[in-house]
Image (cartoon, rainbow over all chains, first blue to last red; front, side, top):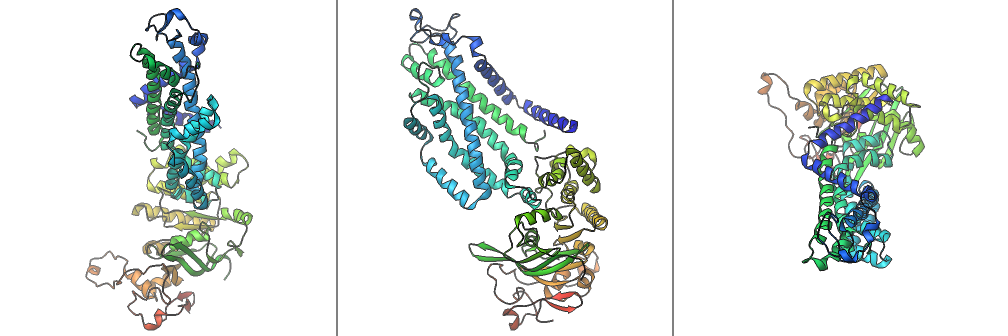
Length: 288
Length: 316
């Protein structure tokens, strides 16, 4: 249908038009695109071998033209390590928050929409998980499963699910009692269609912000877990692990902390800004 | 009576609340003939909307029968209900909250067709939607608009188109004009009446606005706290109201003339009694100026006092 095609385009361009108006969100998007670009084309920018090549003669050197971000205690190029580290951090951040979103949406929406026994069961289980601080929950999962990339992702996802379920459940509760949901029922819409076409789209704004902001949280907790040695293991150049090994040289070579820290901060910030911008842009009610 | 399209027998809907059983609809029976309109009036909270929703099985009735062309919807299976569903539709009160703000006008109207898998292909779907939009007087250029971009009247037209697109025989109109400006109210009412004439539609018209109900109804049912207190043809009820509550309701219609300002009005005393665990006897007894001891006990039944005029009052 040419008609439908045209509509889709105009809707997207409408969203883009509204998004562009938000300066901070545009800054966030630019930073995010740069970091994504670095992560995707890391191999073209600097070969992975530079991350692990240890050059004894060039240990702990400050930033220079040869080593943009300097070198670490084994003489490895920090620039290469930070660039390749972005792959780990971004992948963990995006993967965990998307998984937590999907699981949270299914559980939260069923709890809020169906209510009754379903709600009680899901909520009580979530309550149990909520009792444990997220970082401890992740630690417990890693301790039980062992340290690896996959287990780190599982651990962080698990710690993120309870909050998502709570948020989505409460959003669904307010949307589900709107008249248009009743109207949808009156012409025989199935529960699944109501949840996915009526309830979730109308609860989307806060969910999207929460997810983009969660990505930054996830990057931080992955970094945190790696920092205390429960996440990505050396010599893999994850940002948190870089920070962790840099702490011994904090006073003599502060750049070792500065650059990975800056990337963690920038990626986290950009996801937050983009999330904020999307909230406004995705709401058709806020036309201008 | 011929052509009994919808017959309701002893319909009850109780809600379980912490305070006890809330009798939202209590033993209501009536029938509507094809192509006619039954107006349901009563004050807020008397169970009018619940009645409409229960008839469409949006609430499971506690007891009673809903016969649609002789088929009982209460005992009907899922399949049967699914088959009958497109024949019974609803128009909602609030055109602001009854439309999903994330869908365009075209999507909103197409939704019932998609859900009920009425159309074989996209072309037919587009065709049906365009027809429905034309019928209710929505310009084609609005089809990509979102509801929040339109005014109340246009939104309500979307609501009507959405109800009509499945070509129903029976429509529950739940205060369809009470959220609209007076000038637009008239437009929408006229639209509803034209549609009724064209398509032989049957309406259950729920409202608290008596002037509206007189305009559109063939028969009027007055409800008080879940009970039907009086039911009669529209003209009859306005000329010869029998139940004290109906009289009070009619006396409360504002009359736009200078002299009437000085006339004293019969005003009802007291508050509406709670619909939770109501006492036996007449529900209206606590506020009724004519109530006697006999009104406060036993079941007050709806009696036919003259042809087609039913009233539930011991004093008549």
